[in-house]
Image 1 (spheres, helix red, strand yellow):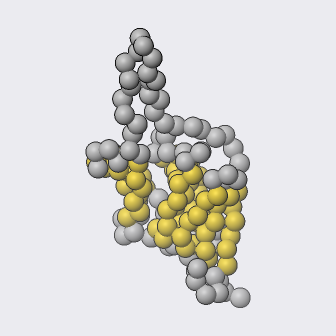
Image 2 (cartoon, rainbow, N blue to C red):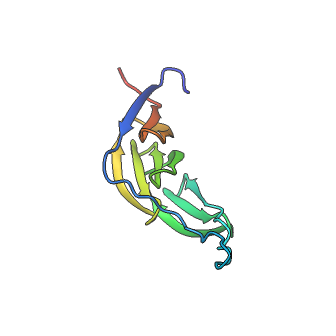
Length: 134
């Protein structure tokens, strides 16, 4: 945490979606299903103002999502399939739906939001405010 930084807590309410891939179980009559996916990797591209989505199993970029300016941090709530991106230049947090890979909300948080953090149990989102003028 930065010296003198304040923390803004954001709680987003709304529908919760559960994404993922189901695989078939094994029984005497059913062959085993495909292996579980490796998951997705979300990379903030600081100077491009977007986030790359990489499929972990193939290390392939499958989507590029435009977000606010100069991302300072990314965190994922795997229970809600939401990705939170703190944007320093635009003073907000972009909320990405992990199923559709699209921005579903932009939450203003204050001057130069820092890293993003999420409490998966409560869906509370945290970011450090890097500059605060008093």
